[in-house]
Image (cartoon, rainbow, N blue to C red; front, side, top):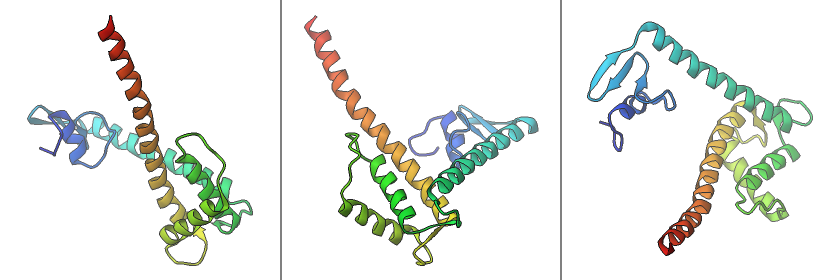
Length: 166
């Protein structure tokens, strides 16, 4: 059984396709310790949902790329890369602070170029951007979930104190 997973959760994790539903993976469904084949129709439906989700994600990534590609030449360069770096930095500000220093943005641009510009041409083509965008949006989502948990914890503690006092 996959580490940290029980019963139905193992199937989805074992196929590497998260979000397909508890215990569902292509062609099979786990039920406790047994594996039950899905009908071809069910497996096809799952495959179609995965494809649809990927297609929607690609459309979203293309829109973001196009919004950053101010001159429409198909690559991000110069100020366009600065805009990307600024967006990423602002996404990781827990206090909602949107003002950034030039030094912060310069450092982010240098870091981004080093990590993302695979061919070191000083430009980000869509392929380079696509891989980076998928990773950074997942990182932003994790960051925001962690921030939400941090704000919920004191609230829970306050509620527990109030309950104990009653």
